[in-house]
Image (cartoon, rainbow, N blue to C red; front, side):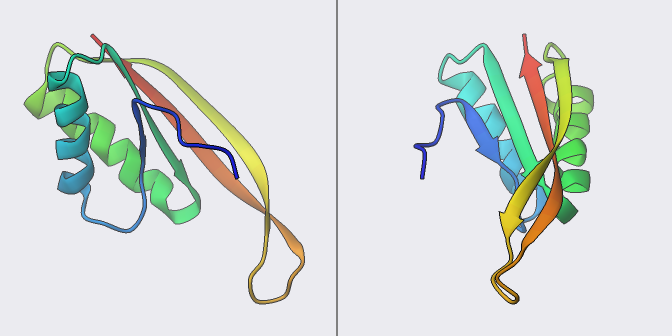
Length: 93
């Protein structure tokens, strides 16, 4: 398993505001570019994080890049491979 990159927020099942706060913390610690990553059902939450952040909390932060992808993940139930959509949203000042 690869180590997690610094300045990357992985979006999962927690409430949206938890991730917004995590991004704000990274920005306040001096980071210029933050990447928000999500897979599957968490993609909509990652988009919400980017929107809440840029519209409400850090209006000087802009979406610099959005990339979408499909990743192959091994199913814990069947053991087979399945395709899962993923998104990377790059936010910066």
